[in-house]
Length: 154
Image 1: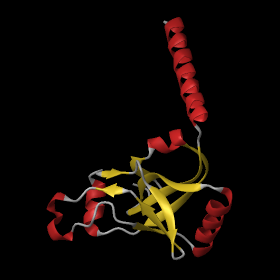
Image 2: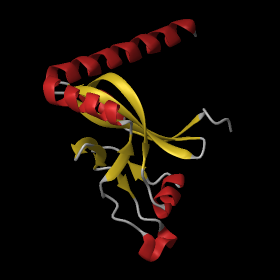
Image 3: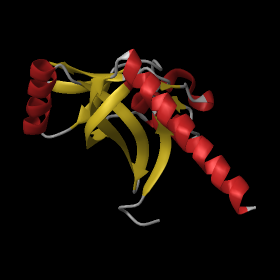
Image 4: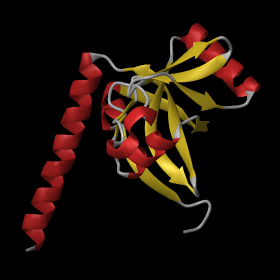
């Protein structure tokens, strides 16, 4: 496998439904050995996770990494705060955007980049209910058009 090739572990599908994704960032994450083994088995959930700033650092809250079966005493709390690795100026820039513009940072996906685990963060603005209904309507219209084209070509 090439070093720059991404092997996705988990994606947060709900994020694109609940938020407008304005920009994305790649970050590293601090993990322990049993967490990596559990991630390699694909036992991670990003569904209700979000990022928060604490003492000038960036953390992920709500990312659930299931305990490793053979981990016994070395297993960590599945919902513990996980530190993200970014340059200080990037963290300060994101902190300013989230405080001034009312945006939020959401983990969009977790993947392997070479041997390292990376997190793709999205700078997002929340959708209102009418935006969500509009998204559903567009998806249904596209699905209907594809079905009609398929039926016409047969």
